[in-house]
Amino acid sequence: MTFSYLCLSILSMALVTYLPRVLPLILFRRHIENRFFQSFLLYMPYAILAAMVFPEVFGSTGGIISAISGTLVALGMSYFRFGLMPVAIASTCTVFIVEQLIVVL
Image 1 (cartoon, rainbow, N blue to C red):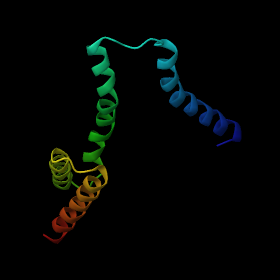
Image 2 (image 1 turned 90 degrees about the vertical axis):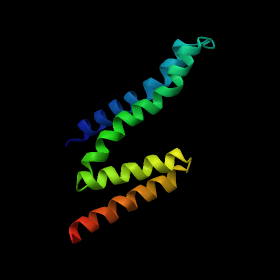
Image 3 (image 1 turned 180 degrees about the horizontal axis):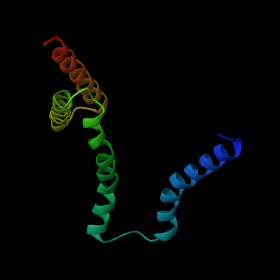
């Protein structure tokens, strides 16, 4: 990897992350009054994050059983409004314990 390639990569990544943040400020100068469009913009980051993270949950663990158990723990704790950190720790520990149990059995 050459230095120019590295600089070009960093510049392109900076543009890709900066443009989506600046374009709404440039394009929408007035307050958005449409309730449907407001709710669409409100839920868009959550939908994109879920679409990026959820498929990787099942590919990053040792097996499908541990992935499902970790997902169920995370969904259950999220339903009861636990914070992000306890949910992440509990689901990770669940995946670890289930994978260790599968190896023993």
